[in-house]
Length: 421
Image (cartoon, rainbow, N blue to C red; front, side, top):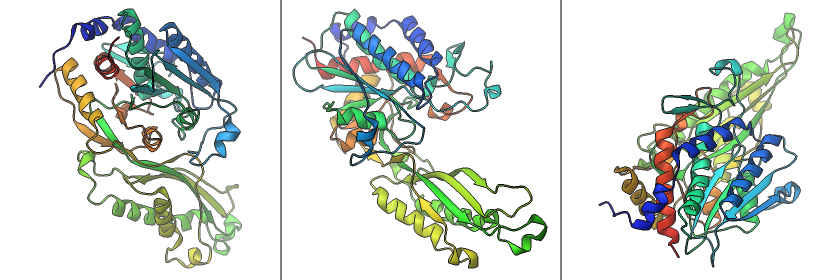
């Protein structure tokens, strides 16, 4: 049943300026903040400025990459990186923040620009009520929603009784270094909303994802006498078949929280490289990909299952020359909001009271910063604007209606959770 909107809550909701929200999103999309680039740092400093203007106490620091890499639980990285910044803004008040709103500033590379309408992925384009551009969905819309919430509090002259925190992080796309560094710095809170795109749902659990590399040996020979060699490409085929069988086995009877998703734990080969000369039998193939981690599964167990599947294949060459498996790059464990935690009901009510519709609880088949916050003792869930099916693609977009609705729901949750002085 809907809870009435109080006068203070209405004042905050009325203080949200939709035109400013869209303008900020367009400005953020224009910054080409691909993971690991200088533009990622540029956008972090932009966020810090907006948080300062909203009268938050802002902590901006340069991540100590060397120290973080040596810490237990380091989540791994994939993109080359020489720097990274953390940004946290907190409203005044005593005690730890009652609520954290968290978003990442980094985006994945664009791919072929010719596949983007207008050929420039970082020029925001609005058609009707949809904004297009790299990062519009994943997750600059959610990032902007967080920033607009604290702007609305200031504009409405509403001071939270308990602190509200906004975490802006880097490197989510390649492992979660930014969130890891933020938590290592000591920033914490009672609960967190990570405003990843959820398509109107409330996501309370994430599968994990582990980046793997497989090196397959062959035996080189002249292409004209290929029978003297062993093609690493050819002997990779039974490995690929074994991976597909493992994937099918790991996705039998998926949990109901995945809402009918037939494959919440996919295994995918993302890159394959083999050979160094067109007329030679290739003596090395390197394949890299991602392994889905089941809810509650120890990543070490997932690694062991994968290694056993690809290294115990009944093939004469592979028995004598087993493939080498390593685990570079991002290492996402699974994560989940504790069962029965009140944050789910609080978020659901805030959405229902601002939109008139009750969101569905679901789980996501991809890794995120959620597992780092929950592992750090901060119960967390996802709720934010956008449909993840548009993420990481040249059709990336976000419906501005979803941005408006999510911003209002988050603002209402912030007022209710933090209280008012």
